[in-house]
Image (cartoon, rainbow, N blue to C red; front, side):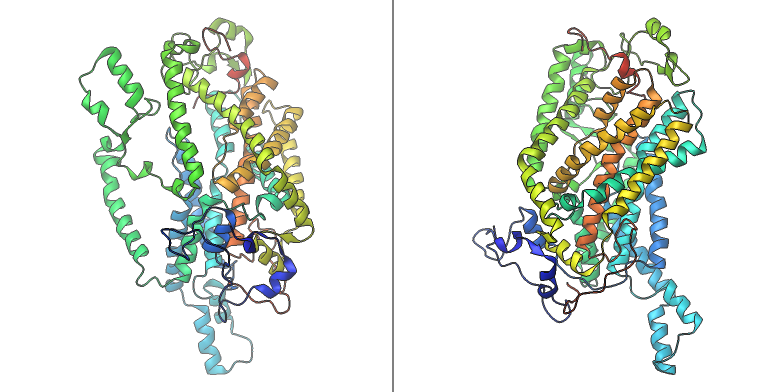
Length: 601
C-alpha cells in the first residue's frame, strides 16, 4: 500500500496541505492502487488508509452545524427513534432502525422545512438590495434567519441524524426497570429512574473521551458500518439529485415496501418466514417432525435453527453486513456454521441433559422442562433460600448454556486479539497524539481548524456520572452494594477499550452483557435486581463508549464544527493560510447465583 496516506500527519502541516473545495481540487491519493482486471485508477478498499483516501473526501464547506431547525427536527426524530427502539426491545425478534433510514428521513424533513417557511437568507438579500448593505436587519428578518437561515446543510443534517440515532441508548436501563416492575416486589421511585438513567448513560460517554487517541483519531478506526450513512449524507448534499438514479430507485423501493408490508404484517403473516424443507415435510409426525422443526423451523422465536428459511418481510431483512470488511463476513459465516453444529451436537448427544428441555429457549426451566417461576423463590427482590430448596434450582437449555459459554470465551479472545495484534500500534498512537501527530488526515485537519473538547470535560462527565450512581445505590432500594457498583464500572471500563477498538476496525463487536451478569451472580448471589443494575452499569459503559466513539468519528468525516457530545459550541479560528477543505457432568444445572443473573422477559 501507499505510504503517502499511512505516514503520520502533523497538525501544522495540514494548514498548508488542504486547499479550498471551491478554488482547487482536493489532494489526490498518490499511492499504488490495487487493480481490478488490469484497470488502473480503480482501487480496492482494504485498510482504513484506503477508506480515508478513496471513500471519504476532505471537503469542508463551513456550513453551520447548530441551527434551530436542526435542533427541532433532531428532537422529533429522537422521540421517534426512542419509542421505536423501546417497542422492539420487548419483542422476541430484535429489530433496529438503520442510520441510513434516519439520514434520509431527516433530509426530506429538512427540505420540507426550508420550503414551508420563508428563507431568512432570501429575505436578507431583498432587504439589503432595497435598503443598502449597511445597517442592522429588522427584527422580522432576523427572526426568519433564526427559524430558517437558508438551504438545508450537511452539518446540521448530520447533527440531526446523529442525535436521533443516539436516542436508542437508554434501552438497557429501561429493561431493568421493566423487569423490576413486572417480576419483583420492589417499588421504583422517580429518583431511581432519573438518576440511574443519567448515570448509566453518561459513564460510557465520559470514558469515550479518554479513549479518543486510539478509538477515534487513528486512521484504522474506520467504523465500517457507519460508512453507508456518511456516503448517503455526502451524496444528498454534494450531488445533483434532480437526475439521481439512486434517489429515484430509493423512492421506487420505498413505495414498493410500503405497499408490500401490509401483506406479511397483517394480511398474510405466513410470509414472515418460509421454510421449504418444512413445507415439503408437512405430513411428518413424532420424532421426525421434531427433528425437522429443530433444523429448519424458525417462524416462531426459538423454534429452530431456521436453516434454508426465507423471509419476505422487510422488517427482518437487513443489509448492514455488506459494508463490513470481507474478512469479518467470512469469519461470521464460519462461526454461524460452527455454532449450528455445536448446538445440534449438544442436544442430540444429550449433553447436560439437554433433551429433557426444549431444543431452544432463553427462559429458566424446571427439571420437567416447564417454565421456572422466579416469583416463587424471591421475596422483596432477595432470594428466599427455603423456597429455593422446595422448588429446586432452575435449569438452562443446552443451546442457551452453549451461547453463554461462547459469549464469555469470546471476551477472552477479544482482549488477547487486541493486545497481540494491535497493542503496539495503539501504544504508538497514544504517544504520537501527545506530540500533535496523527496518521488520520481527517483528524489532523480537524485538529488544525477546529477546537476540540478537552479531555478533562469528559473526565468531569465521568465523575458526575459516578456520583449520581453512588447516590442511587446508597439512598435507593435497588439491592446493589456500593462495592458492587464500583466493580461494575471497573469491569465496563476494562473491557470498553478492547470492544471499541474491535468495533472501530472491524465494524462489529462482542456481546459483553453475559459476562456482566455472570460476575454479578457470583458476587451477589440471591440479589436479582441488584444483579440487573450491575449488568446495566457495566454493559452500558461499554455500549455507550462504542456508540459515542462511532459518532465522533462520523463528525470528523463530516467536518463537524460542533463536537458531537455537545461539549463545545465555538470554533477555533482557522490558522493563517488555511482554507476550508474539502456445571454437573450429567445435566446442566444453573447455580444459585445464576437465578439472580438471568431473568425472564
